[in-house]
Image 1 (tube, rainbow, N blue to C red):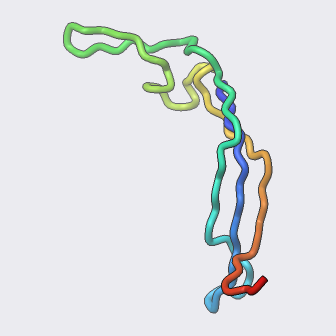
Image 2 (cartoon, rainbow, N blue to C red; image 1 turned 135 degrees about the horizontal axis):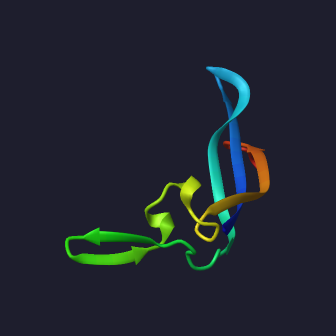
Length: 89
């Protein structure tokens, strides 16, 4: 399985419609990718007289993909910060 490690940052604000702080901008930064290796169950496809094999992740839904093709996203850190406009330092 391919593992993608990400950092998530939520920027919050308040507005007249919803005075409680709520996220309005979410950013994900890819930190690392650990490849799962070659496909273990390639799929044979045919177009006319031509046949070829492709990795199962290009053809099958996630639940039918082999362990090498399946992608897992892990969140390393999740931070929340308020949006600041015109704050002098």
